[in-house]
Structure formats: structure tokens, C-alpha cells
Amino acid sequence: MDQQRADKQLILLVDDMPVNIQVLAETLKDEYRIKTALSGPAALELAARADRPDLILLDMMMPGMDGIEVLHRLRERPETADIPVIFVTADLTEQSQLDGLKLGADDYLCKPVVMTVLQVRVRNLLQRKQIERKLHLASHVFNYSGEAIVITDAENRIVEVNPAFTGMSGYDPEDVKGKNPNMLSSGRTTADQYREMWRAIQEQGLWQGELWDRRKDGSVYPKLATISVVRSPSGKIDYFIGSFTDISRQKLVEEEIRHQANHDHLTGLPNRMYLQAALEQALCIGRREKGEAALMFLDLDRFKLVNDTFGHAIGDRLLIEVARRLRDCVRESDLVARLGGDEFVVLLTDGRIKEGATVVAEKILVSLSAPYQFGEQRLNNTPSIGISLYPRDGECAETMMKLADAAMYDAKQAGRGQYKFFQRRDAASGHDQANPASA
Image (spheres, rainbow, N blue to C red):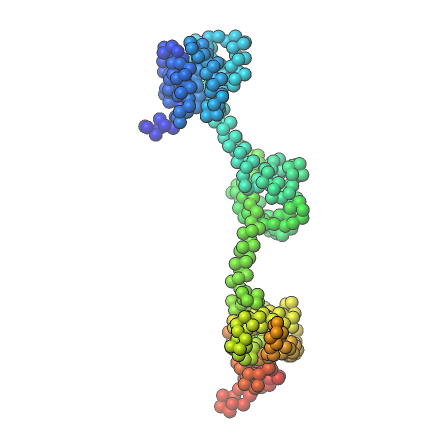
């Protein structure tokens, strides 16, 4: 019961005659909480408390401080300025009403008060004030929200946008009002995505997801969007409301995290994880399209000696330069990755794969064997390269890696600074089987 009472709206009754207050209170007490004051100063003190009234019924003619003066002081104080006031008076002259209205009185009731009229006037005024407060709050949220908000009519024509929309898109309200929001489309969101969006909006009344839009200056940006439907009591669509957040920074962070997870921090090349996925995909395409691929496993000769002699800083600079030279030796469509340490992998696809791998391997040997100059330090280093071919040598990523690694060790044992294709050996005789290697 206490909670039910606390939920009721509070009305302050102000009159210098207790009998008048009693009549008003009896009429209103079942529906509202009631406080009373017998003078203007008492009314001001009650109105300023934390438990402020939702409405004041104020007698206009009181000794000492009349209702006009009370209303004047209420409107002067920020904490009481918005409390609605109904004057209760026997003086309904034009001047008295004008004086009250100028100060912001919301309504008048003539004494003797008709109780049914009192109830309706009080109920209507409180409902109107509640609606005004909600509209004020909605207006504040609309204008000061950090999210861009777009309101369109039933035909999806823009009727209103908020300042955050202008800040995000660069479009002023005059630029977009009356137009379809598809004018913002960047072309990166597919037609299927838009169809799914509208299906959810029409069937569920709500859709959330990512869209790509274009700003007024032509730049494209991703946004997280929520679009909902406002329907009339009959169920007819009146408006669509869209709220949007620019997630460009979030996308950049996500992309950076993905890049760091899939790339070597020193050279910027794809790492082992990225290579594994790329190799699996290349072999899958090869199986489907009957294509070929070559995997080169590359190791720098005597790299430990470089680190031990010149230090790890020079060793790192050597690895960075090797990565750069490797990228220059292959096509844009080919993959260069660093497994770790001084181990690199090159993945080639398309074309006459063995002949192409031979050309690339020779190019890499020449490039990586050229001298390296780091300040006053001049280094000479060579690579050893092992090559496995798909589908000749193996049909899975793990096998291709193992065979290319084995071929690389063959190249080292043969004297370093060269490349070897994988060769199968007769386990009994130790002789090479078919598919002789190039060197």
C-alpha cells in the first residue's frame, strides 16, 4: 500500500480557509496524494521541498500574500518554475485572469467549485504535463544524443534528422529532408543485405546490423544501425526511426587485431597461422579446378652467425630486408610468409607451376645473395630453398610443408645457396626415384 501511495501524483492545496481545502481534498484524495497549506509562505516552503508537488491548486485571494504573489515567486525559483498551477477563485474578471496567465497559470476554476469539473481539469492538466515532459525528454535525447537519428515517414521519406546525423554524415537537414535514405548508400552494402533488412523491419518491426554509407564529402564509413517501426493504434506504419553509430574506429581496431594475429610483427609478412589457412584454401581451389601449386621453404644460410657476430639488431634488419626482397621477387597474387626465425615460405599458384617455380627460385637466389649494407656493416648471405609441388608431391598442406622442408635440407647438404625440388627416394637403395630435381 505504501508503494501504491508513493506512485500516486502529489497535489498541493493552498487556501486560507480550511473548509475549502477539506472539500477539495475529499474529492481528490482517492486518486492523488494530498498536501495542504493555509498561507502563501507555507505553500512556497512545501513546493520547494524534495517531494515537490505535481500540481498546485492555488487560492487567488489570500491575506498577507495572495495567489498572484505566490505564483510570481514560484516562477522565479528554478526548482518550482515548472510546477503547473490552477487558480481557484471567485474573482474571474478579465484582469485577474490576465494577471495570472502572464505569470504562467495553467488553468482557472471558479468558486464554488464543481467537483466533477475539478476532477476532469486536474486529470487533463496532469496528463498534458506528463506528455509535455516526455516530449521534452524525447526532444533532448533527439538533439543531444551521440547517435545519429533519422526519422522517415511511411513512404520512407526523411522528415527529421538530429545534429549527430549532420556531424556524422556532413549533410544538413535541408540536404536530406523529403529524400529517401538510400541517397546515403555507399554501394558496399549488397542488395541481398538490404532485402533482409527490410524483411526484418516489416515482419518484426526492428532490425539491427551494419551498413556502409557515404558522407557528403564522398568518404565511405561503416555504421551500426538500429531501425524500428512506429505504428498507429490501427497498426498502420506512421514512421521509421533509424539510429546509427559510426564504427570506423572499432573496425580499424578489429582490423589491427586481425592483422597482428595473422602477421609477423617484425617483417609485416603473413605468419604461420595465415599461411596455413591460405595454403589450405589454395589446395582446395586446386582440387576443385584441377590446378597446381608450388610451396617454397626458404632458410637463410648461417643466420645464427650473423646474430652472434653483429648482434640481434643487425639480424633483425637483415630479416626485414630479406622480406622486402622476397616480396619484390613474386607476383601480387603470390604469398610470402615468415614462419619464425630465418624461415620463410613462398606459395605460388597458377600457370605452369614447375617452370614458374624454377624462375622464381632463381630470381630469389640472385636477389637474396646480393650484399646487404646496414650503415658500416656489409653482409653477404645466401638462402637455401626447398620446393614441393601440388599435386605431384602431396595433396594436403601438412605434407606439402614437410616435403618442402625436406627439400630445403637437401639444398643445404648439397652446399647451400641453391634450391632443390623434393625428390622421393627408394628406401632400400637410397637412390632418387622419378621426378629429378632442378638445381
